[in-house]
Length: 277
Image 1 (cartoon, rainbow, N blue to C red):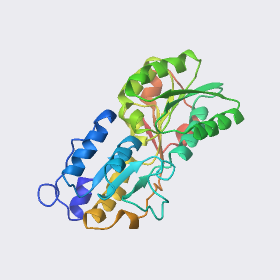
Image 2 (image 1 turned 120 degrees about the vertical axis):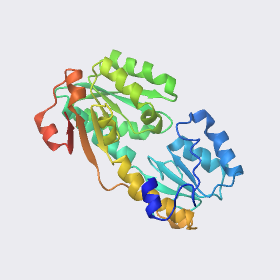
Image 3 (image 1 turned 90 degrees about the horizontal axis):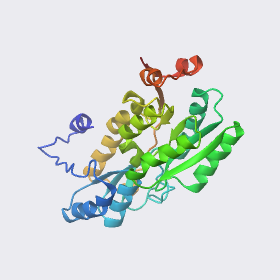
Image 4 (image 1 turned 120 degrees about the horizontal axis):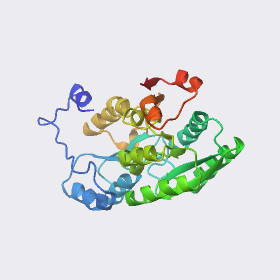
């Protein structure tokens, strides 16, 4: 993203100052940090994930907020994609639609599976979204068990509960909490030999079995940096439409599959944009 900002005329240390203190911060600190940024009179707040966007939204109605999160309209951050209104714009990740697509891929990846689990961030995914996933699984003759977490500390026990419930695979739903905890999730599921699908292709490159969705690197380079430059030049968030990803990739990590002794269907491997061997 910094290379693209440089190309657009914003160079860190010259005409751009970046406060990176919020990166990797625990959710309990978001509200305090948002208040600190408002007090510092920053020009733009970049927030990723529902919890951080909401903290920024509650801290200011005047400083532009560039949000990167799963469902901008559904979470009430903007009035509509075309006309955001207020002081928030950014990227919406089509989370609910893609969670369903990932569930289809997961069922295909484990032929004959009769029970799967969804690992869910209760702060992000709504009951209606979960009902859609349950109905879609039922239509395929598959039972879906739901395992919700609200905090990082609950993830391990939720995965263990999914395993105890007899799940043959896990759909790790879109969530900034689950994304930031991905290394722990990879390790726990690998130890249990549970195949899983994740929300970003890069997550398969980092050790997950399957990743499907927009490329994070591309989104930040091509979209977020361009929006940020416009806001830094004085554009109003209310006038900048919320953008959506248009390119999606399927990445499969065969090394992870072999480590858990899981054989993936040839048809799925042939359809993948990238296979890590």
